[in-house]
Length: 78
Image 1 (cartoon, rainbow, N blue to C red):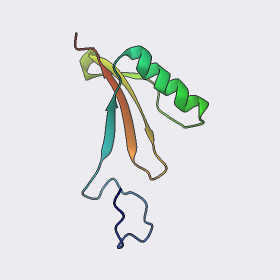
Image 2 (cartoon, one colour; image 1 turned 180 degrees about the vertical axis):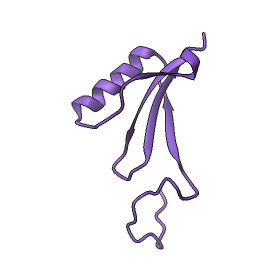
Image 3 (spheres, rainbow, N blue to C red; image 1 turned 90 degrees about the vertical axis):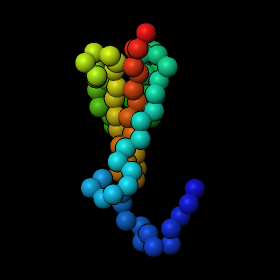
């Protein structure tokens, strides 16, 4: 992990150039739902699991403590 000395503790700002969000792929719909359940049990607010990509998969997202959007997605490309 790299820490820049110029950062004075500012929170992440999605309108600045740089990281917009981070996406993680689940290998199955069951795994996607397991991650959602784990976040629920951990008290992390998240979106509903919803359909994406014209019905090709499902996803949900949440915001980490630094304000960065994290997305979990499963695409059914079989």
